[in-house]
Amino acid sequence: MSPVRVLVVDDQELLRRGLRMILETDPDISVVGEAENGERALALLPELAPDLVLADARMPILDGLGLVERLAVSHPSLPVLVLTTFDDARLVRQLLNAGAAGFLLKDISAEALTDAIRHVLAGGLVLDPRVARAALSPPPPPAAGPALTEGERAVAALVARGLPNAEIAARLHLAHGTVKNTVSALLRKLGEPDRTALALRWARESAARAEAASS
Image (tube, rainbow, N blue to C red; front, top):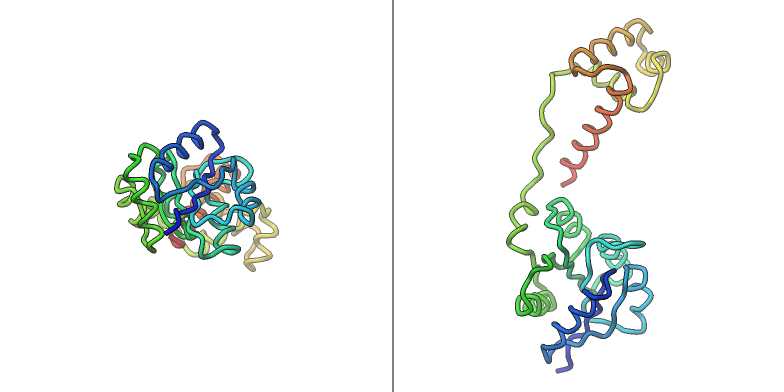
């Protein structure tokens, strides 16, 4: 049986060389190439024809997440094992949702790394136990704020989009004075000093709610 062909992708040359040395101590693994970012890795694929890509999560130009997403479209059968120093649960969920075959921290032992490669090639999913629980648990919901009426929420959403009171009134079929009073009520309820702060807060909380809903 021929050795497993691995492409190592990391923006730090010393780490790429170190990974090559570790992997090639195993006679069943051959490092067929190195790349400093995801774009370079994609360019090398036709020439190298790897069986597995071992990639860093954080790289310039095209990072690990972007590489996983691109390969899921162009090479859906090519597994990508992500190796990084970051134990970021949100990043792990993004990588797994994009199709990564596993996520390991860089302080993993050489034996555990080669075992992970074998497991992935057998169709398994590899996830470092130190981040598995956080990654596979749903993210906490955004903190509950003051109760707002449906009308207040509608006005707040349009304020967050930068619309003036007159346009908000036209869109919601409300009197201009009603919108003005609603904005004042929102500032009091949410404890924000001005309209800009209100818009930033609503946009931030809306993004958090959307992320929680999609995870």
